[in-house]
Each structure stands twice: as C-alpha cells, then as structure tokens.
Length: 96
Image (cartoon, rainbow, N blue to C red; front, side, top):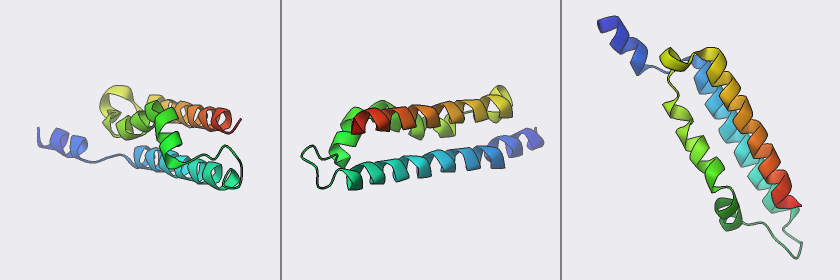
C-alpha cells in the first residue's frame, strides 16, 4: 500500500516533459501571433486567443490529470502530441 501511494504522488518525467513542451509551445505560438499581427489591421490579442482557443487552454490545464498507471506512457505521449498538433492548427487558422 505504501508503494502505491508513492507512485501516485509523483509525476513521471516523460509526463512532466510532455506537459512543459506543450505549455512552452502554446506560449511561443501565442507570442508569435501577437507580434506578427501587431502592425496589422486585424491584430491578435490575448483576449482573441483566449476567446478562440478556450478549448485548447482547457486541454492544456487538463494535461495534469492524465493517469500514468491507467493510461500508460505511450497513450499519454500520443495525447500530448495530438494536443500539440491541435494547437498548431488552431494558431494557423487564427492568423489566416
């Protein structure tokens, strides 16, 4: 029982890396979108990003709830990669 409580308390390194990669990617894409449109007529602001990418922000904040014991490393990595692709697509369509 003691071993199980230790396993559930700590986040595996691959999960930590995956979450951090997606958070940094979102930040980089958001900053790029804001900077690239700063002089344009249709500026992209944080409010516009929050309004249009609310579902992505929710998914980013929900990454921590992935269960390594139940889901496994391969599934979690695949889910995080899928989220990264969704972010790229969402930012591309936002800038178009």
